[in-house]
Length: 599
Image (cartoon, rainbow, N blue to C red):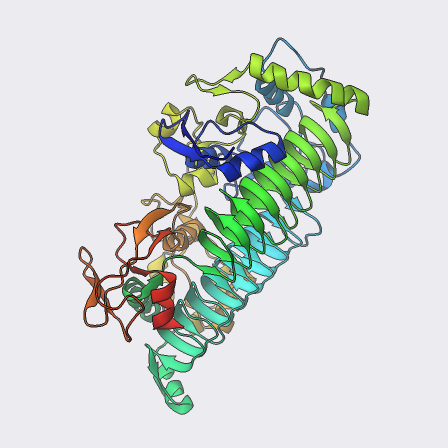
């Protein structure tokens, strides 16, 4: 099709457009155009991904204690990873003939309620990762989620190819770092935001290739800088001695200063580097990546997030492993998967539609928990000829007898799984983080809701009784149950209490970091708030000419240019798509004006 097509979202009733390039992709992947807008499609996928809500459970096969992503009372059995991967059971035993009297999605739900599910989502070789979810090739990973090829990682999310990192979010190739958000290749550094290739530094925003720098912003290739002021080596050491970073009260004051510094700094409209024809945020070494976020080394991607290197031809996905190709409407897909549509959790799988946690398999439709299988429908084995004869009939049946949810929304072939089929409640999933709803709103929209469990921890140490200085922390602190400073009064899934483990205490001492006063969940949400949403707004560059200050009138934040820009007098005419909402306080510049000031 040569022109865009305007449509009305079946869920939110807002208008959205399907572009010519989108039609080309849908034809290539052999699906009809979507009936829901990109945001509603994301929400529908997100409600199937539970990363951080974990429950103590017992494997229904071996009886051993384990952690599971499934809350008590689920209709299916849950196996530990060893049992799920073993030959002690056969998922084909739960297969069924296709029932032409029922909608497909109803049959799929009945299948998933029969087949045992894996407790934690882990791939490949993992060592000492019993308290981690959505990880691959990890070692010593603790309360960390969505991490690839990393070692000694604590309380973090989306940390890849890293070692000895704690309390970080969206970090690649970091080592010995604490509180890094949206960073890459940082070493021995803490409290870094949107900074990369930095060494021995603290409290930096938007800094690149800097060493021995402190409380600064928009630096490039600098050393011995404090609060954006250049020092000699010996003077830098004297300045840093004034800052006792191992002291809790001092560090909290510095955090407040850093928040003010970030707000008043110059902000580039998007964090896109070494990429061509791309839009979104946090995109690196990519080509034709549009309306997407956290995408690295990828090509021809749209409406997607958390896309890893080597991925190509991907639409509407959250979590794409290395070398995923021709993927549509997926959650945790990729890792060599090819031509997969409407999938949840696949690895090295080819030509699959409507599958859940299927590995190393080919030619599947409506299957769950299969490994090294091919030509299966609803977990029943078919010959190649039977399979190829049945699939067109099932697609037609899905259109003739669609599934209708509680709110009257219709699901035919070409739609992702209805939220009613999710094995999780809305507030257990990433949907609650990115698109938060109240309990009443979620239930009204047809989602499930998990009521908060009663916390009965016996707190042995209140946060205010912890030593201010990390050097005063005794080894016995790992035996304490510490109360969270939020005391459950926040909206951040506060656990009300937490423990400090031995490896964590050792890390704090090495890095000179004071003991935390918040539980891991509350700390996660503090980092989450620093990141921009997975959403774009059309805006104009805020740059004014050199003689006047660029100012956000509402927040009164201002920035004065250092040189004359290409547009001369008056305001820059450039427009862009950015994840900075118009009401945000920051001064946001286009690429040209930003580079004039920073590069």
